Length: 467
Image 1 (tube, helix red, strand yellow):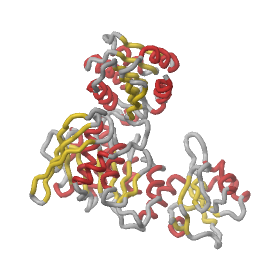
Image 2 (cartoon, one colour):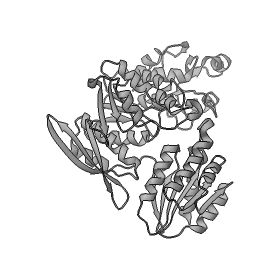
Image 3 (cartoon, one colour):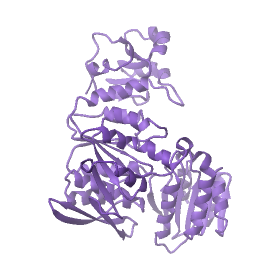
């Protein structure tokens, strides 16, 4: 339950207009007028595409009694809603974060935040699955990892929970620091550092600086513990400045607290890993299958196993969680078998490292038929976009790809970089790509589809499935 008492403690309140007859507790918080329920607090958030204040009449018609609104809006429109409860603030988004922080302060529950350039949502879900074998876990839904999503996740915290696993994301400096000030984590994990949001961060070093805001926060915290992937050169270098008692490391290449070994793929291309660690002076080892597709899972699975080992989840329970894991998103490396074809749907997001790893994964997949990479633009790469797309084309040549279909303004550079590939086709519109692809693919073929969210490449996947 969420309390009015915490709500009116939010900083920067301009005015409190809550009736004495108002309820003392609420069932939850909503920012979407379409899904808000009676006895929830509605926060009117102004976003890029819409403004929650526009829908307040609909919200109150649904039986909602209390709304948090911008003070400028209230001065102009408040008299139209007599008898309703309002908390007026200068910034409703900042108020949402502050309310989440106040709500969290009512619980003595450890928080683990997970960030990184690639695989953070899947790693968060895998970690939560492992820890759920022993603890009652609250985790972020989907990729709720920003200044709105993280507070909404925290506001679901209940007395029954024993741990909280949250995803933190960023595309500007200072964002992860802000999220840490809300969530106040005791534990942090960064999956890796890669070429993400270079439009804002400019260089990979800039990405590292932004992601390391999580570790910077924990470094200053007396009880802060950092999970460190030593296979990432940026994280390994950062670890040199951390006291031993504040770090827990994992790696495939180095001697770390948890050591991994890749043990091959199953027939469904699910990776198997061997995990080694020491407990009470005794060396232990176990082997497990990770029920997700591709090379990405080798790293995500070891990170989850490391978290489980640190929090004393038994090897048997870790194996069970990783083996039975079901990805929350249908657009994250989903393998679809249809009419003898294998379609790899990786249309959720895209950056250079994840594209290369996806192509490598497909190339290792055993198949009697042909292999197609269907790629569209990697967005938010800024000035280096042309070079990075060109490099993807060169990489496709290097690994021996025979069939490359590209679509999107930036992907023309990929097409040019892959000039040596015989069946290298570029399309100016998605419909033409779909038609030519459908005419080419046949039984036993493998089709890997990848692109940034804004390119909507799941439309290609849906059309292939129809075939």
